[in-house]
Amino acid sequence: MILLKCSLFCRLTISTLDDPFEGFARWRDQFDGNARRHWREDLGARVLPDPTYAGPVLLRALEALRQISIVDYSVDAWLALPLLLQRMGVTTVLLSCLVAGEKRLRFDQPADEAVLRRLLKALAEAAATGLDRVDAIERDRLRAARAILAIARPGALARLAARLQARPVASPQAISAEFGISISGAGKLLVRAAEAGLVREVRGKQAWKLYLTPDLAVAFGFVAPPRGRPRADPPPLLHDRPLAAMLQAFDADMAAFDRAHPSANLVID
Image 1: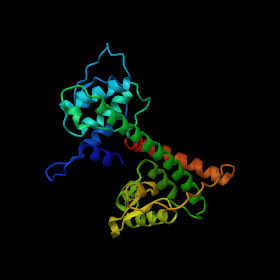
Image 2: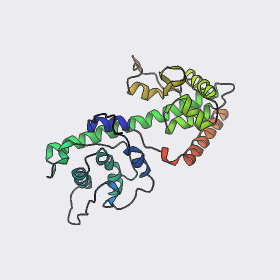
Image 3: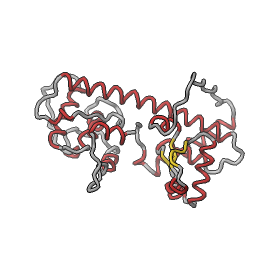
Image 4: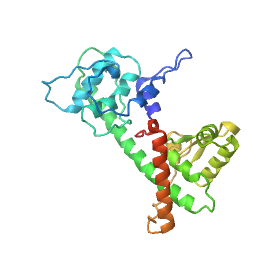
């Protein structure tokens, strides 16, 4: 979602001579320990502090974004905004979904009201989408627990469900490498997950199949959205001891995945 959003804002032209997404790995590496002074040079340009500024901190962050975008004409300029928002105290944690850009920021003059309105609207929409993603992650977690509880021999489904919470795209090759199993075994595991409703197949080409979590498959247009009145969520079953144990094991798997892959802990987008 973040990659597509950044591509939309920046109107990137895909070239065969370079990689327009090469900055995302470096951006992700900046997530850890981001609580630092916003005028450090690691954001692509030095943004000097303004001790005389007494207005809204959010507007000051957008001005800092403008100063960065004047120097940096790549996508990295727009990616700096979530980092700036946390460093300047607008958000208490880093919200990677809050990526926004405006080409008029690249002009060497303060942003006018129209530009600021567009940026604030884009941030509001990104925040709303982020909340929807968080709700979807929680629904996926409960759906996975119920589905796994109903299966007599779930095998590695619980581990896969924990992995999908942080990395919602899966392929047999990726699961094979991460879980230490054969590609054939990984493919069978993903088929079982699809049958249990944990993922949706979005590309079916034998060994090159690709799976997404249900909400993202709909959001990206791979699967038609459900029609009619939404189904009510089933009541929680936490009083059921087997399910409670299953959820505890699921949380333990998720915590183990977070420790093993700290750079995958993205706030989605």
